[in-house]
Image 1 (cartoon, rainbow, N blue to C red):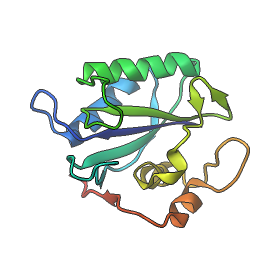
Image 2 (image 1 turned 180 degrees about the horizontal axis):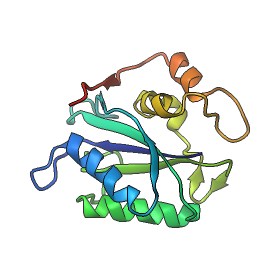
Image 3 (image 1 turned 120 degrees about the vertical axis):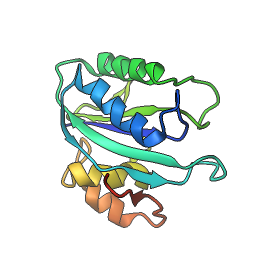
Image 4 (image 1 turned 135 degrees about the horizontal axis):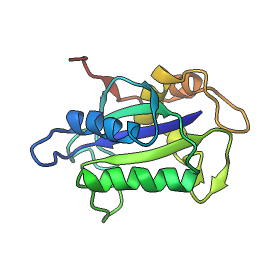
Length: 160
């Protein structure tokens, strides 16, 4: 199972974060077909909750691209939507993370994503599209990891 997490907390060219996330999935679908897409979630900015809140979602895709090539494609989508890499964890127009690529474990790119299991803004949307997914090597499912989190602030947004 190939899983991607998306987030945005800055507008780009007059397009708000909700639409940026949805449009980014349309862009990804052109080179890696999306087979499932979560609802949108709102979550406080991390690590500085004084920054604008995030809109988050997750998608499950199919592709024959190698993980590094897929990640390069995701970075190209980020750039097309105004992402500028600078200060770590700064507000951004779009953040696309490759969470998992089948059963691959690797350091470059880091798979599975090293911090996904502690982030409700990743686990909540993942649990909507892949509740029974387990990271390579086993362990808890996405739904079990989410249920085990102490601090949960991600809230599902109403669907339009």
